[in-house]
Amino acid sequence: MNEMTNSHILVNRFDYLEPASLQEAVTLLAQYGDRARVLAGGTDLLVHMKMERVAPKAVISIGKIPGLDRIAIQAGHLRIGARATIRAMENDPRIQAHYPAITDACASFSTTQVQTMGTVGGNLGNGSPASDSAPALIALDAEVEITGLDRQRRLPLDEFFLGPGKTALQNGELLTDVILPRPQIGTGSAFLKISRVAADIAKASAAVVLVREGNRVVDCRMAFGSVAPTPMRTREAERMLIGQMFDEDLVAQVAQVASEEVTPIDDVRSTAWYRREAVRVLAHDGLRCAWQRALTLIPYPSPYEGRFAGSVSPFSSGERGNQAQIEFVPRLGANEKRWIKLKVNGREHQVWVAPNDLLLNVLRDQLQLTGAKYGCGIGECSACTVQMKGEPVLACLVLAVSAVGHEILTVEGMQKPDGELDPLQEAFLDYAAYQCGYCTPGMLLTAKSLLAEQPRPTEDDVRHYLRGNLCRCTGYASIVRAVMSCADQVAEPR
Image (cartoon, rainbow, N blue to C red; front, side, top):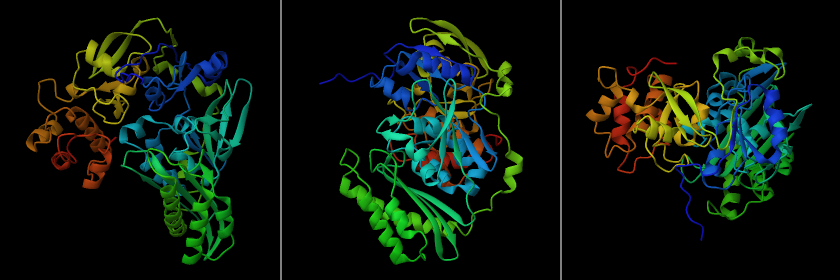
């Protein structure tokens, strides 16, 4: 029997590399080959490293390469940079207007903290058949742009996945963009998912895209996740619908055929029989939703296009335009330590770190900021939540060295210099929302982010935003009441 791993630390040592440009990144990937892993959001890679499932010799962070987080309309296509976060995609007005299946998929994605940290490139690049973004993007006929040392190539996304954990990326290549075509007039799309709990990966998921002309289906694409070795389309079911008049009997038949095309397995999350049944229901409901949405889709181009048009080529001379304001740690060897500067709670601190030191450990051990708590260590409880760049992140899944140049806020920094508590802290006391207090710092910082985004949230908004912050003492009613009492007074909206 294997010993349990200590998820509070990273055991293996590795070179940390922080390229300043795309060219530098692919050069490093070519040099290290399969000994390197790319770090974008870190919500998947660092979990696997903590659990000692992977032990790369080099971690190449693409977090400060300009342009990779863009979402831009260019030549009639929507280009989404590989480092665009799930949260940014969910909130993007162009995606909401023209590609609602992507909005649905992003909204169903794990927790707020994982949405904030996780990236579309990471979600696709890990090759998981349970990827939430993949079915929606495949159904929308997305392509991926892959950059190597001396070439760029495009590949349909449904050809990118080769098997569980396997993709078409070769040594020295980096997924840099997801490219979506202009939707046809009369297009509607939807994404649906079934999981054990709200923040879990899918037992089964479905994405449907329909093009309607009156009551006739002009085109149809359907894609499913967690029901085959890769995210897959059900082409026979699609063909049954194309060119036909839309009616309930036909929808039921198409959904049944889709459930017969998938190839699920029994595993710890579900049985193959249940997954087939889920696919039948998800396909039926997804078809009906997409059909209705096709009536309300905003025509493309929309009022958003001119405002957001244009993007920077990955190899253009403008790539380094804003690097003067960014601090880089170009390289830190596996056996090295270095003084770095972290700006925490408005003050600059010097800390002594190795590449595998986690931000949570540095905050607690070197800066004595013990508000952020040890919990699961793998991003499932959110007890370690802090704010970075004003957004909630999991300090247990952030390398300390990658936090250089970012503003960090812990619960200790919420109170004013004279000791006066933040209104949220006062509310947690007034409404007895703190219970044992272990989860409270993470709850406070997540709630502070929510109120900065939505000064007047509904109760459903609060519950959804805090879904990843686990409280083991009791229910969440007092926590929700405390947050609701502070609506419109805690922070200015970003």
